[in-house]
Image: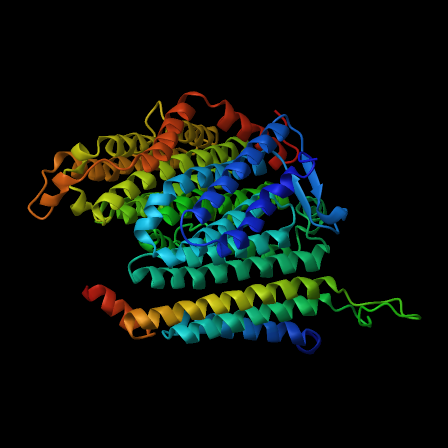
Length: 496
Length: 118
């Protein structure tokens, strides 16, 4: 019974939980319910991945209406992997949230905070699950609207302007996307992705299709913060409450990258992309993004903003895989999508623990904390190594596949950029480590000597992610195995 | 001539779209930006509704003697998009109210200056 409706339950469960959580009395209850829901969703997502990992495709018809008329949830390995990342990060962020939220958000807003969090989870999971392009838009807006609200809850007033800026840019992006969807519908008469993929090839020459493609790509480039459309991201990540930053940094942009993969490889095909300037443009923007944003990250004085710029650079790596347009490239994108969620999740959690103890995310306030908070410090070091791509960490695996994909096409420029990008990552990770460990506590931070290690409730989720970074650096069966499986279904007509 | 008159509503869509988009980008007043965003979204509603029209098609309500109907699906889709648009506007305006409380102004330049001087 449950197994038949697995794919739908994954989305409906948090959706139903949201209004329930909203009316619960403020206190620990809303947190407990959301945590329970996120764990059940994680369980369902793992179950779903096991079902499709063998190469199966689950097709779920909503309300019993057959596709292409009804909405179809079409789950293959790619969807299932993304759903697993989203629900997994949620299941780890929520236990972490308890203490952090009590400190950062006024008591009377707790129930509403968790309700918005549940809605955001619903939206992101919905995007991952659905096989209907308009349904995707609806879920996109559910996740976006709730994340605007979540970001605006930050303590500083800049959180409000950051949320506003994100709202304007996010809405423009989403509207661009529906313009594209409308044009596709006008040409093909279908909204089902699989159906679109079948009907589009004969229309590839048509100018409307090219216009639709451009609108969809620009719309989602805004959503995933592809350089130079990333301006909303650093502010949003810096001023949002810590928990929101962790969750959004590890999931929201990843889901948008997945949609990009789905659009580029399944709905349109790569042969189509090659007939447009899009693939070269992607590569160019990624190269500029990786180098430019990594430089920017080096000069940041705020730890959250530093990691935010690094996120924009990392999104460049993910899009590189799409721009290369090969099986290896798409595999690298999916693997990096998974691994980056792990490393950024771990790093933002560690920064969050420092913020929890010090009350500021500025680097200068962290000096000497490495000795007082050894576990948090170690988490930053390992997470940072993974971000750089040192062998033995998850980050190495994804960079390895990216470099392989670039070498396969003899694209030495890209190989160089990936390596330089990693070197720049060494510098900005070192900046955090240096402040934490090698700087003596200055006069201003005398009180830092009294700072204790972060509470256990924060350390455990953090270390789960840190250990996952190490584990997936050695065992790549889940990441690379699933990604390879996914790419075969993602790119029709590809066989080993 | 047919290019202009035959596609009359599409031309309007483009004009409204650009007017709205330009307002969002060029205005410094946060409320005016939201208004621009709204106009921008409305153009998309018009686009969808125009797509749904079938030449000589009747209103999509089943009736005897009529066998050509307009396509109702885009209309239904756009109902959803309208709801999303309303929610976005409401949230946007709520944020503007909070910004006004926190900064005492809703002009982008003033807000920027206040943040810089900190």
